[in-house]
Image (cartoon, rainbow, N blue to C red; front, side, top):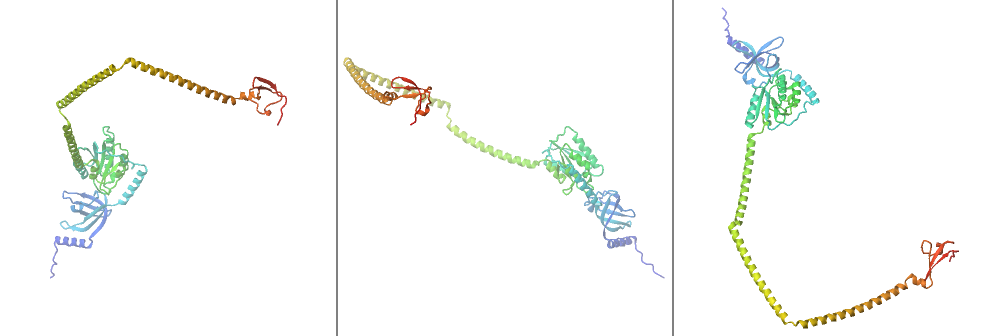
Length: 446
């Protein structure tokens, strides 16, 4: 009689199958399409990965799901790295996912580069308007439930509580995201109460995969940002994420938090600066007060009471009055003494004898004057006669008196040479006494 082999329990069988699968197949990369994506409250993600001929159940546990940037939606094509295993309670063959990334990234990047080059050639990336600082209103286009808006609002509240922030909730992922942002941006630009010099638009969302951010690479959204009347700041994804919206905006921030930091000043820094200015002002005021106090003390020491000043002036006037009276009395006394002296001298003089003396002196001076005038007249007459004789000696008339003549033509020109005359010419000869009119008959050469 044969013994019946010892049977395995279902648990043991599933455990052996699991160990065999994990040992023999191990970690693999698998590409396929997502379906039946489920996200229970535990944070794990359960889904099916399939192709056109087969499918496999998959599980992405919460610890790994935090690091997956792919959107994980039904119909998405993904590449998955995981371990082949078996779920022992149900005996389900499954794949435990470790990492998930979107498939077909090369095609998306190529399309991104082509559209980027086209928009750049059209000048869509030429905006670089200065943003108002700090802005009167900050208009934020973002998801109302995303982490990005929470970060932005937290930074704005901490740095500049005075900011007037308005959130325009729009989807930031999926096919409806770009049209919604374009519509919201157009609505804001049509509001006349918004001023480009005082208000700014912030378009932002958190990080994600290229597919997650693809709405911000929409051509029409980039053109709407370029044509926006209001200045636009873009802060999409992380620092390494760059979208066409970033290029079309007037300014790009690497993260939503960085955008908030660039939009408004830091109240703590301003408070510190104001504190420093306050300290400087206080020190300057103290120094000014000390200088003015010292100057006031100096002026106070120099200042005299008006009554004291009047007394001094009164004493000075009294002294001057006394000096004036003494000087006047002294002058009167001196004049009186001089008059008395002159009176005595006048009384001692013999006026008749003085008159005779002065008459004799005048007569003597008259005689001396007549004698001097006679001598001066004789000297000048002698000089005149001598000058007359010298003048007569050199006078042409004296030469004519010695037998010479002066010949002149009809115009009165003096004839000095025979060549200056012509036969038949009329000449006038001036003699020592009188004139002769003659006619030239012939010229003789020497």
